[in-house]
Image (cartoon, rainbow over all chains, first blue to last red; front, side, top):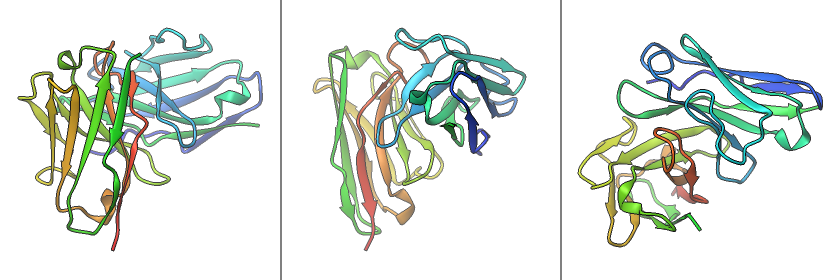
Length: 110
Length: 119
C-alpha cells in the first residue's frame, strides 16, 4: 500500500495561513474519520496535533485545524509562527485495520 | 508521568538480528494497543507493526512480515520487537507508540532508538 500523498514542502510568512493536503483513497481517508496529524521537529519524536480529522488534543494551539473532503484531508495552520517550522505527517486508519502515514511535508516559515 | 522508553538499538550486520524493547510507565499498559513506527534517515514515518492489549493479535507491514515479531509482557509493562534477517533498508530510528487516549491516533511516543544495518 502506497503512502498517503502530501506536498513535499509548504511555506508562508509569519502571521499567514497555510494548508497541507493529504490525499489517500476510498480504502483509508475516504472510508474512515480516523485521520490524525503529527508535527516533528528535527531529532524529536512526532507530536500529535489533530485526531479524528478535526479534533485537537489538550494543549495544542487552536491555530491548528483539520478537515476532510472525500479522499483528501487537510491541516491548516493559521497565524503562522516561527516555532511551527517542522515536518508534518498525516496518518489514516485503513481497510487493512492498520494505520498508514503520509509522505510528509516540510513547513518553512519565511 | 506517562512515558515510553525504547532501548536495544545499535549496529548490526546484514542478515543479523536485533531485539528492541519499549518500557512503559505511568499508565495501565495492559489496556492499550501498542505499535512500532520507524523512520529511515531523512525519510518519513512508516508504520511497522501493532499488537493488541492481550498480545494475541499482531499485524505487520508487508516490508517486515516474516522477519519481525512484535510481542509484549504486560506484567513487565514492556513492548518488544524482534528483528531477524535484517537488511540495509531496515536502517532507521524505531519508535514505539500508543493510541492512549484516542483510537487510531498516536498520542504517546518514545524517544526512539537507532538501528543501523551495515557491514
